[in-house]
Length: 65
Image 1 (cartoon, helix red, strand yellow):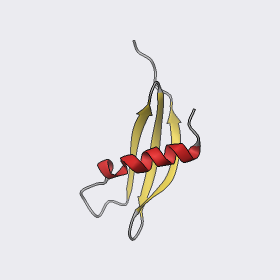
Image 2: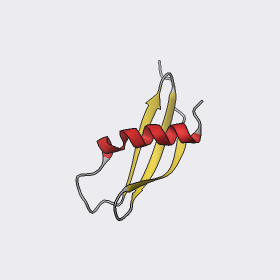
Image 3: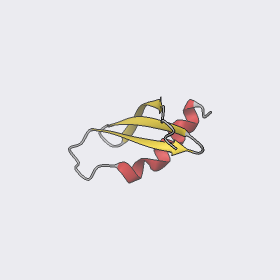
């Protein structure tokens, strides 16, 4: 299990991939998975100069196989 700091670090490293092209967007969310089965949803808000990590939630993924 990852701690809060690790989740934020991973999310921050992925953030550039998810930044909206529309500069008017002020919020964004995305999910990421850490093997084997740890999925998290993260939230960011846009400040005056940068995106700020707001929170995360562990997402329960059903194993359909």
